[in-house]
Structure formats: C-alpha cells, structure tokens
Image (cartoon, rainbow, N blue to C red; front, side):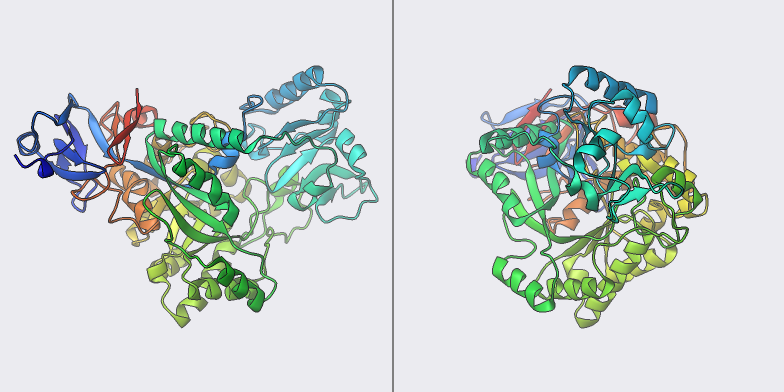
Length: 552
C-alpha cells in the first residue's frame, strides 16, 4: 500500500456520531496527521491500514466531535482558586458561616472577599443584610462581588469613606434613613480601599492558564472562545502556542475600544489593523465585543419593562420604573456597530436583558441597511429573553444566539420568581429559536472555580446539554418544557453550530473526511442512554488534531 495514503491511526468498533449533514452514525474513523482521512464501516476503514497504523478498539464506545464552548473566561478562571478554594454556597447560612470562619482565621482589618456571589442563587434569593454581615465579621471588611453589583459591610464602608453623605449613583441607600444599605453597583467598586491584590509572575499566570485549558480538555473541549480580552490579552495564548504548551483551539473576542466619537473609534480600529478571522487553526480573532448592560443576577440587566416589586427587596431597587443599566447610548452603539462592520468585524455584545437585545438588534438593522451583515455572522451574547419579534429579527439578519444553558440551570427559578410566569416564557426559548432557523451557540460563561460542575457558572458541556434537553434547573423544577430540544440539537450547539460561529464549520464541528481530527471518546452512549445520565457522562479520551491530549 502507498504509505502516503496510509492512516497513522484508526479508531474502530465504535459508535461514531459524525454530526454531518445527515447526522450519520459510523463504526470507524481513520486519521492521518492532524486530519480525518475517512469515516465509515469497520471493514472500509481497517483495509486502509498497514502494520505501522496504530489501532484503537473502541469496544462499542461512543465517539463525538470535539466539543466547543462558545464563551468562557479561562484567564480569570485559571487564577480564581490558586490561593484558596472558593466556597460553593447555596444558602445564607452557608454564606454567613463561611464569612464567620474567615473572620476567625484572618487578622482584624483583613478583607474577606467572595469573588462571585449572586444573591439570587441562594435558596432565600436575597442579599445578606448589612447587619448580618456585621454580626459575623465585626472586625473585618467584607465584599461580596457579584460582577455588576455587590455587598459590603459597615467595616468596609468605614475604611472606604462611604457614609450617608456620600454622593455616588453606585451607592444604594435606605429610602427611610438615607443610610447606605451595603449594596453597591459596579461603578462604585473603585471606592473600596485597601483590597489586596496578590501578584503573580507572568510565568505563574501562563502556567495557571495552561492547567485550566487542560481541565477543559478533560470534559471534552477541544476548542473554546475566550469571551472577552483586550488586544494585549492574546499574548498569553500566543506564548503557550510558541512554547508548544497549547492543546486547545482558541478564538478570542476582543473588547471594543471606548466610543468617544466616530473619528476616534474609526482611528482605533485602523490602528489595530486586524479584524475577525485573523489567525490560524489554533488561535484566531473572534468578534468585536461591547458590554451593553449589566446582569440578570444583580438587577442591572436592561429589560423591556420595569424590573417589578420583587426586585426591590432582592436588589434594593427603589424606582418603580427602573429597567436596568446601559453602558453606551443607542446612537453611539449604532455608529460603533456600523463602523466595526465596515472594517471587517463580526460584531457582538454582552446583553442580558430584553431591552438591551432590542437596542442591539436596532443597531444591527441599521448596519444591515448599508451592507448585509449576514456574512459577518453578528451575534448576541447571553440575550436570555427572546420574544417572537426578536426571534424574527435574528432570523432575517442571520444573527447568532450565543446562549449559556448553565444560566438556565442556575437562574431560571429566580427569574420566574422575580419576573413572573409571562416573562419567563421568553427565557431561552430554544425550540422556537431553532425552528425559526437561528443558529444557537452553546457556551458557559465560566469565570470562577476549577471544578466543572461546582463552578459559579459550570463549564461541563454535558450538564449544559442535559439542561436544554430537559429544561430542568438546579432546584429540580422544569420550566417551560415546551421549549426543550432534542439530543441531536443540543449536541450541535456544542459542535457544528459553534464552529459556524467562528467561521470554521469547514474545519471542525463534525467528523468528516478532510476536517481536523478533533474528537472525544465518552463513557456512555449520548444518543440512547437514560436522559438523566447525560449530565454525568465522562470523557475517556480527548484528541486535538490527531494528538491525544487527555486519556482517563
């Protein structure tokens, strides 16, 4: 046999879920170099081999395309538990017990910080009060960081100079007494004084990132999109690649420059000299990203209607007409989107509320009137609340929905409680979105903690797939079951759909001849195992470009 056509490796006697156009199932797969040479029956593939071909008998195990996460924050995650484990708390008692234990361990005056604490994820669905924090930590400043909002105690206020007389929109005050409640918005985080900042060397940061990316390999991820980096943030990935220490493919969304004027924004993009799709098969540039609003877990997402009465107690919202926050004006957003589009960028934005989504789609419609945006595959990150009108606009414009099933798993109960049964019907209505022809990407928004299940936003892709198949939450409730999707649709969210989102559907996302040899071998048959077993599927082997990067 001509050695030029001989595969270096064959996996046979398995269930190969190709995720090709017809979702065909094969028995064996041949790999040559970093590519798939052929997929087919055992006899068809084994006859391609010679004595030098490495053969793996799968013994009936299932093989899937390498999984892709459309939205993670691995640099932040990689450093989150380097110094101590972050508690996975689910109730006020667990939280207060943790703070009290830290107060006993720490010296007086030392900060006690939880880096990602969302009150709606506690069973009680409320923040601890300032008095409750003071009781368990009277001699230590406490900061519970919820990304777009947070909670501090009296000691933290005192050392930071926050008083009744402080005039800052990010300091929430009691409507009766005028005293700060302890709830502060992100805009006021900079007021906090003397927060420790543990320094790491560049090599320590690089090593931590390398280890985090290997954790992703262990749950079947062969590609990721880093959801948000400054342009300089590419360096760590490039250095890992240069040192042959990168074993996962990375697409990087780049933070948009500030928008002060059309001229300034245009000049900034020209100075960069790059745009979406720059790069190679290991590292590439993704979308240009804006941070449009806040978050649903802190009452800062920009909604279509006011947040409502229940949000007052949970988030300290006093204004009955309050809809959330936006970080850029509608006019500025429209100008920025059009300029980015003209310079070859795929445009996207963090937008968690329906009002923010409508604002973004309006900007996309304006850009589309100048030249079609469909080829650039614009997207909406998070989105959450897709009305029929928003779905139709996404369909017409070819806008991708970059969704996080982990948010549904963790947060759908709280959103139903706060927003009511009518608005929750539009919370990730995936079946309606897919039936309309929208490409839905699957991501996790992983930011904090190392474990794939107990992370603040769990990054285990099989948990995400199980969630959208069952519509079941962490609390055990099933919300809007009519919007459940099939196993095949869920798998596509984490494979071919995500490859499409980064313009790489011809390279990866399915197991077909000529594509990159990115695949995983798993412990159970994803397509036929009991549905509740999907969430506990384990990865037995992960392969990136024909190289085994993880094996159990």
